[in-house]
Amino acid sequence: MKTFYDSVFINGSSLYQDPEYPIKLEYYKTIHDEKTSKAQYGIQIVKTEFVDGKVNVESEELENITNNQEEIEELLGILRNNTVTPFGLQEILDQVLVNK
Image (tube, rainbow, N blue to C red; front, side, top):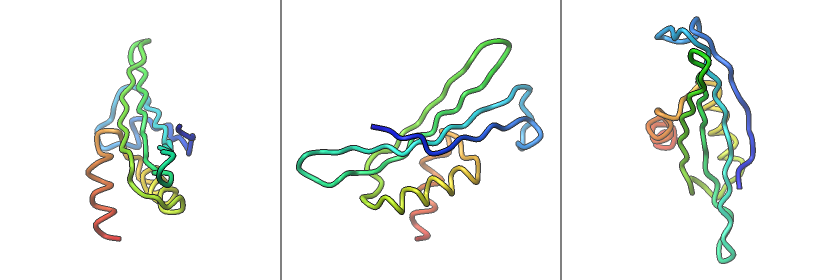
């Protein structure tokens, strides 16, 4: 199951490399609930790019990051505030979790 957390709509002026087209980033909290264990929280980021009348979608999901709902909400906030894309999800989470 996944729950919508937040989204960011960015244009070229807010990126290091100015794309010609806007990008929408959506952040989701995922929950993997097994009957034999506690809920495991994960994160999914979906990037939607609108190019020449076409829609390109890229997605990345990491499961079982933590059992703590407050921690997953904090991580989602960090990712959203820094407009992390699916491509950077693993690397950024590795850095953030090492520094905790």
